[in-house]
Length: 173
Ligand code: 5GP
Ligand code: MG
Image (cartoon, rainbow, N blue to C red; front, side):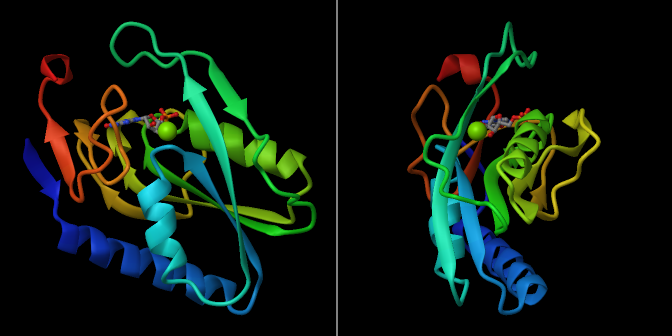
């Protein structure tokens, strides 16, 4: 597997993201909401870099993709979302691909009464974006390749890799 982003690059990227969030929020309390399962490493690394009062919640979203990467129906699970009414939410996901997942989650969290919802992703595949929204914070723009590691999986495996790696032909793994 080819390394696309090394541990050091990832660490610098998360430093940069955390500094931007910290600068924008000042002393504001935050509910950090991670999207399972791909965001777990990013959530943990971000939390270590943020000060002040932070609550943590998780949500999940599965998209039913047909052949290859055609996006299908989105299934959102918000049962583990804490009370967000009148609160400021930072929604955190591993990757912004078509953007459908983040767009749907931002709307769902607003509909639970959040005062504000900002979105943060580690990676974005710019050429694939299909929605109008843009994440507020993006760690790295990457080409349209399939990546694993640092939380991201292929068929449930490889989330444990400390770097972001590239799978040329996912069918062979
Ligand atoms: P979107 O709704 O933005 O199209 O899809 C985002 C979700 O698709 C991500 O949360 C992630 O679960 C999955 N995804 C998109 N691209 C990749 C990729 O290159 N590798 C992995 N492991 N998952 C991806
Ligand atoms: Mg995901």
